[in-house]
Each structure stands twice: as C-alpha cells, then as structure tokens.
Amino acid sequence: MKTPAEGKLLRIFIGETDKWQGRPLYEAIVLLAKKEGMAGATALKGFLGFGCKSHLHTAKLLRLSEDLPVIIEIVDSEEKIEKFLPLLDLMIKEGLVTLEKANVLLYRAGQS
Image (cartoon, rainbow, N blue to C red; front, side, top):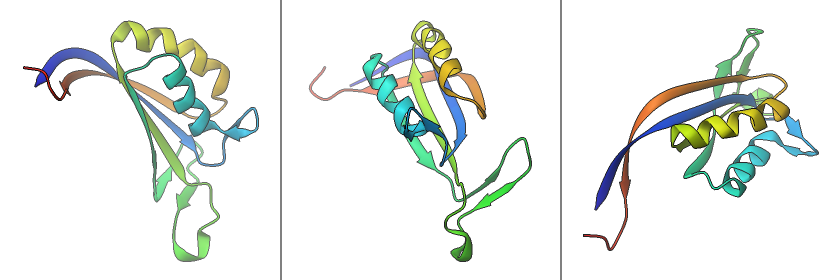
C-alpha cells in the first residue's frame, strides 16, 4: 500500500574528495541522516559536472582520478529537514544545497 504525504527533498551537491573529520563527506552526511532518523538518504556519484568555479569534473578514461560530483538526496518532512540544515552548515565548506517540495508516495509491504 502507498501512503501519500507532503515532504521536502533536500539535495546536496559536493565533490567526491570532500572530507569531514577524516571520512568522505558524502558518507558522513548519509550516516548522520541515518543517526538523525531521516526517512531516507542516497548518495549518487556523477560522471560529469561543474560547480561555482566552473571546473569541469569528468570520469573520462584518462581522468579517472578527478574529483567527481556527488549528489546526496534526503527526503523527509519539512520539520525534520529544517532541523537537519544547521548540521549541514557545520559540515559543508563548499557545495550547493537545494530544497524542493516533494509529494511522497511511501510503499510499505503488508499494509492494507
């Protein structure tokens, strides 16, 4: 059964080599989201992109060691997302964060 609800989509754009306390930043953010009880978080690695400095990051064969883009998506209620944002402020030194309204269709097995 699916349960529709209104929520927020938090999207975080950072680099693959960004760090937080010695670990990859994308990993630290996803683990923090889990610790904070967020509904879900996913880190996606891009193969081509650029940011505010217009440096092109690509996964082309000869440039595999480049700093590839990573996008972290977190979906939850507006209240929980708003409480999570100050934690991100401490962690992200360079990147982009976007917020969008989301219509959440949650599928759960065994419910009727």
